[in-house]
Amino acid sequence: MTGRAEWRLAVAVGILLLVRFPALAADMSTVPVQTAAARIQDVPVLLGGLGTVQPLNVVQIKAQVNGNLIALPAPEGSTVRAGDVLAEIDPRPYQAALDQALAQRDEDAALLHSAQLDLKRFQDLAKSQFAPVQQVDNQQATVNKLLAAIALDNAVVETARINLGYCVIKAPFDGQVGFYQVTVGNLVQVANATAILTLTQTSPISVVFTLPEAALSKVTAARAQGAVPVQALDNDGRMLAQGTLLTPNNMIDAATGTIALKATFPNQDSHLVAGQFVDARIEVETLRRAVTAPVAAINRGPDGAFTYVVDASGTARQVPVSVGLQWNGWQVITQGLAGDETLVVGGQSRLGPGMTVRATPAAADTAAPT
Image 1 (cartoon, rainbow, N blue to C red):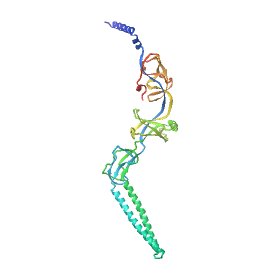
Image 2: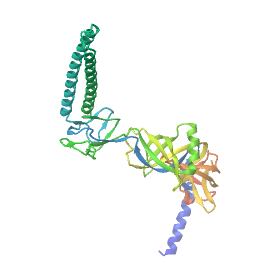
Image 3: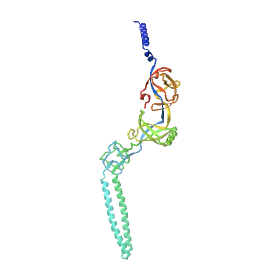
């Protein structure tokens, strides 16, 4: 069979099929597309900037007395509460110093008691002129000297107690224990520059980020309305944490034309780590009842943005639109749509104005990604 004969046979078969099955002819004239509905919803206006996670508090745990390190009760990486013991230094020398100071104070207190009794006797004898006045004065000086000695003893006792207390190092705040810089058994000294360990507060935690100085007026207006929400996202745009703006810095960086801002996050799930780079987004206002369309429904052409609207008869028409900001997979439409239309979000490449479509609702993650 020649090629011309084969072509004629195929045409004849096609015509026969279309005559016998008119529904098939209707299907061949329609374009399969995926659709989703436009929405009217509140859209937050977000400003974004690169930020760095910073702890609200971080402290290097160092020795305040010299001695052997005998215990590190908090494991590396563990979370501790304020008042938990982080390190212990051998307390025996400082306990001995305290005992010695207490004994010296007891001795001076006994001498003072005896001197006061002698002073009372001399004063009574002096009243009857059986003791010279000089003797009374000398005894009074002895009593005063012993009073001063006891005051000094009290200071020595307090110093010994403080030094003994320094042998147990406690966490000043809730935080996470870092790596040990000194291990048990080593001699630690006040003069050592190396810390025993570092304690970092991880909950709450802060993020410092920058915005153009032109955004400061919007931030100030938002703060006047109440707490300003801030989001922290990773490099892939995934939400890590939600917090609130603490404060902008008190100066604009003249070299870069930016303003630094600090936000705090509860971080109870520890998704934010000190030193981490994040994308910070601050919500400065909300567009109320904005007309929105899925981002996938917006097309670009020589004359600007447009979308395909499917009417009740299944006909697609091309509608020019003006677009605003994007948020959470939605595109704000400032002009062109009313918010109740059915839009084509898949299969646009085969469409033209006035074509009939066979619509299938798009999956939720395709129509409106989160």
